[in-house]
Length: 360
Image (cartoon, rainbow, N blue to C red; front, side, top):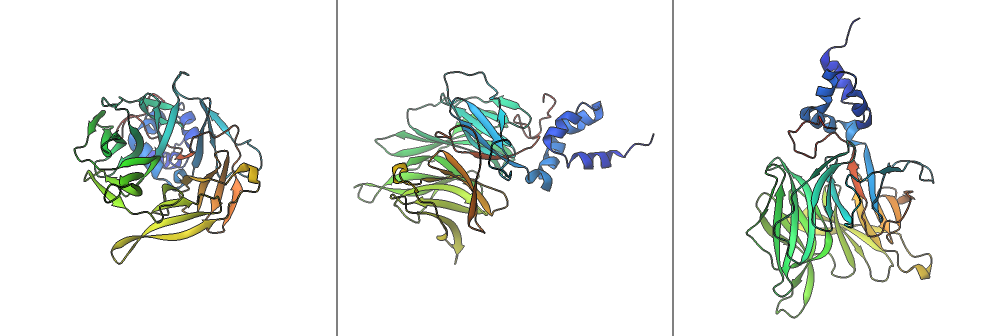
């Protein structure tokens, strides 16, 4: 019986979802070796079909993790899939920081980090930093193109008296943490940051001139140059969260009275960066007893036209930037303090870029 050439078989397999590929690894040794290969995983991730398979991951109170398709229609939660957390339950709570190439970075309350691929169920516990001061801390996770490596950035405000921020960087290739020499005189104001163009951005407090008070500013840390920079905010009033939208650094401003929520993007004009107001979201409280409708960024879909919002920490909606319409995303339970994370279903290994996936 005639068989298809290897290149045609590979081409067909590259177009399949992860769930199918995991099953087809059992067909024969050749298919198992191919699907487990790191180069195949990278090519599979770059396929348009793979890029389009984004899912929303929600970590609810009680160590309940739910995954869902943001494009699924219907008014029930029939499309919600529960995912088992890879570690045994303990007294520690965990936070899902962000996703990158289908990998999720997870940090527990004891600062134990791990990389997790929920599609393949691979889980890689990582060493925790040796310097664990009692301080304001926030984490970020990304792939650094300048060094071809996955990295975790840890922003640490080491003293409330001196208002100083330091940076710890974990590199997957070396499997080690190190502290960066340069420091910045500020303190994180929020425990969520975002990566954009090779730099990590977060909201911070800094002393005003004359040291008479504090003002808020966006601080960034460039991974390649390992230096800090500052970006002024479009407004110093209300609640602001940072994300990346349509290739631009974005800020969401929510006024203190719950009247409106505005979205700003950072644009370059005449060689200088400036904020532009691109949207005002029409979310208001329908019941005064509910208080103001507080909108939090969740994340943006890759098409650049839709993004997820958390409303009052219990409602998740998908907002269409172009049509200015929205729909509810159904799920079971309560969001609590978690922020939903968008991830892509991939075969990428949490053990390293050149590692095979023989253990999945």
